[in-house]
Figure 1 (cartoon, rainbow, N blue to C red):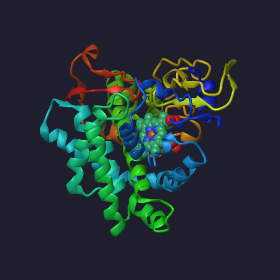
Figure 2: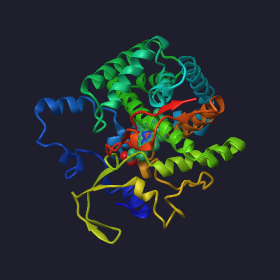
Figure 3: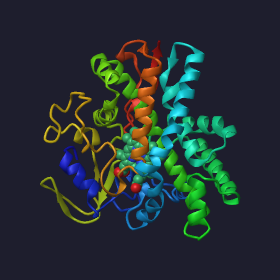
Length: 364
Ligand code: HEM
């Protein structure tokens, strides 16, 4: 599906499933052979609580428990913490000195430390947590990541939740333990799965969007100067960067019809798989004027960079806050920031999962 209207139709239609176990789901085609019993067992273990792969009503049970954690108000309360983490990382970058790899020093680190705070990861474990999530993400041709890193993070979250069950703190996991574990609504493993999903969904996306946005802004000095002169423009700029890059790629938007239906004048039969091309939908000229142009004042709110329908990004308010604070603070603190080298030398990633940059050499 390439047009905006059909993208929204597919993502919003309750007769279309995202569950990889639904017959005909396109993910099955990615496996060259049927999974072995052992592979199935491992997959099932890491599937618990992953509501991004579930259909309603099962999906809604988990999602509803997390909605209060990502409201505009709650995210406003997180902003000072995000600002602090961002400032500390820029202090480190300046201390290490120019040049630097912005992906390593900043892009990966901001969302990692924000998620550490959200989940209540103790400070002493930050390095372990960051290095394992980096390993998981950088070796992820299909978002499955390195099996070792996945297992290590799973074990880590398992321990973190066990500890929180003993002593619930005032953070997302603590509140879920108090409100849902103690009443028996959530099992220990489901809670591990939900936090794992937050980590994966919230890290790789933001970690790619930060360096991409910095790159785009540095390559457009006139629009960057206008933003610097009018910082009120940052929220619109973030929205346009999200539309322009549409980093969540087709593999994530994998769906299957559960009934015969018509989409964009085409008959789709039950059991037929579909992929939504978010990047194409977000450049549909029927919806966005001059769609290939970056226009930071466009104020495009109806893009599908955060998806659409029941699975629309749960963390979108947090993502917007992270991006705005990261870009604004970086350009305020390092006004002479520049890219080292030419664009055709940069390692852009086109793996079909999340678009991004493998590295972004910068100097100041
Ligand atoms: C630039 C950053 C981000 C982008 C572009 C993004 C994009 C998306 C998209 C497109 C989906 C829908 C996938 C589908 O329909 O299959 C999604 C779902 C989700 N996102 Fe994000 N995301 C971002 C950041 C975050 C953050 C920071 C968090 C939380 C810490 C988060 C948590 C989630 C969760 C839990 C889901 C699953 C929702 C559900 O199935 O109900 N995301 N995201």
